[in-house]
Image (cartoon, rainbow, N blue to C red; front, side, top):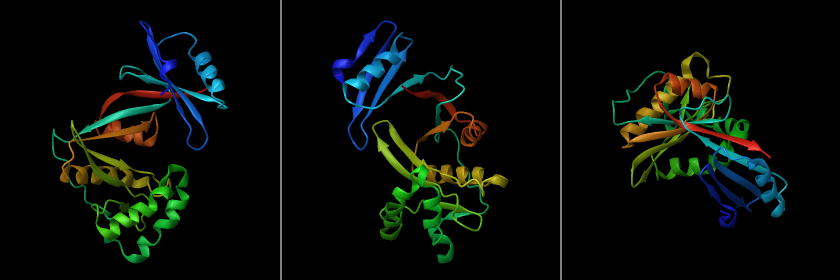
Length: 223
């Protein structure tokens, strides 16, 4: 956080940050409706020798952005999350021939960050250091959902990722995987689940249909 660059006024607040890992990146978090935000973000980026900057705008749930990310909440304390059944089972329950296709799937979904987490997933399943949590549907693990409980002072949450290959999601498999993951999280003591979904995307529409509460939005713009 670039504390010297923080601007706090009645009409809003700007909080600039700089990451030097990998390709240096400058982000300016903008709260409110200040004028000149884009110019300030560009100046900060240039000052630190960064090629570009990103302007991040958190918005409330009353906003209606055409794009960006929606923050959604699934509350597990209100009612039980039933096991949906169907062709969904723990990753370790699939035959070895099916489990062996996971590496090819991870490479296909590398843009979603799955390839980098594959070794950790395999270690956790092998040494039982966490509950097996990759789920698969249909005849191959082409749409796994990785879930893990995390704890904080405000309760236990269910952390999960769900990169889907487009081909097998038709026929309601995405909904089955979602409900199975929520059932798993609740059974393992989670109180809630926070998700980020692309506004208007398939996951966004699914979560809205499943009754999740919208907590707001985040819009990111390149400067």
